Length: 150
Image: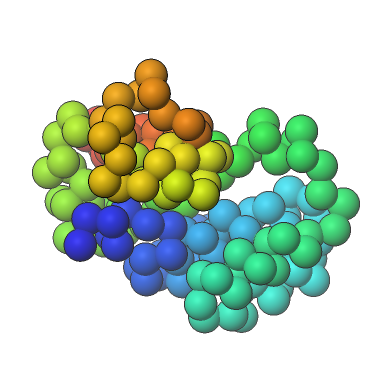
């Protein structure tokens, strides 16, 4: 349950500036397309239902610049998750109930959004030993703090 609710692909539709997004993954990929002015991919992302389809389209964004994406991606994911959790009271309650827990994206293959370790890895709760950046986990922690000050 925890992993599902916190995942960027969890189905929790939300609205930002009059646009409906099926998942936080959809928002992230749509904003990536918008950032690089790829209107075609942006429109396609809004049409697909499954987050994996949105992710695949996000990989096709034209005029992509890794440096610009690195500078913007964390803020985009914070925005996505703030919208997701603030517009769904039951999800907001769930996230706030986690209090001050360290949140991690436990993925042995994702060293950007995750910690680069499986959920059962003995060092999963020790940030000094992580093999990844855990950007999703830190974004969720930031969103939790924002929701507490609302």
